[in-house]
Length: 314
Image (cartoon, rainbow, N blue to C red):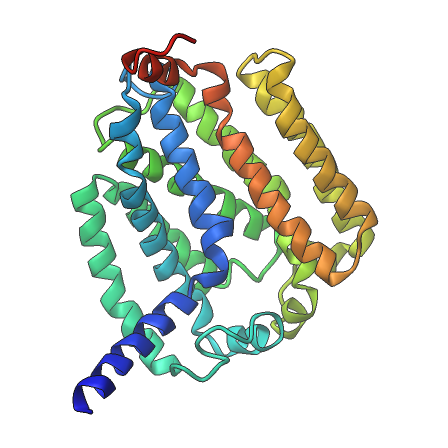
């Protein structure tokens, strides 16, 4: 009986840790992992490796997922531990550990104190400690200094910079840090960060009531529902064309990003129920994954080499 109780205790603790990040895993960890893996597979477009091999890069997927999840875990611990954050989550995400009563704010703070050096140490081992260090600084600015609540412009800028580090760190882990950042890589990181900074407030449309409870100055609260929706739809449409154009893709390279982008713009403008907004947010995260994949639309030679090694002609 004692052993069963012990196992249940550990199972409960594991579930609590997971619930801090559960609703962000598919909408954040998966797309950022896709950025690193796709960039690593694109070879000379974004790295110094002129001929990457498919399977060795794919084997890095669990490690890239781990790095992203751990850094997300640190951010969410810092973000969810404040009383006003708990009040917001009681409305928007009542299953999270604090509003659900699975853990106290004091225990969350202590868990954060433990997680910070552990995640930083692992990031040193994985070769992405610089990105983690900057993410800690952005984390402090966003959460403890209130940068995420003071205004939507500052909030979006901080998120854009943070995503640049998640993307760059994912690429470093995916390539085992065996490259220097190339000029074109910097441009791609800047462009993808701009995509985030100008469209990510789509999540605020679905979180309106909880953000009001926290007194957060998001785009829908400050500008109103209609302007907020247009401020998402227009940039999504623009980036759906601009990102393939950056890679000078053929007509076929525009089909998927433009199709998904148009769907997001249409849903944002014409489907205005909360349930629809939550679904549109998920479509947006899939769209970012499509955008992150565009380097492979430009150079897919890694797949050609793989199938040639199998004796298949393409």
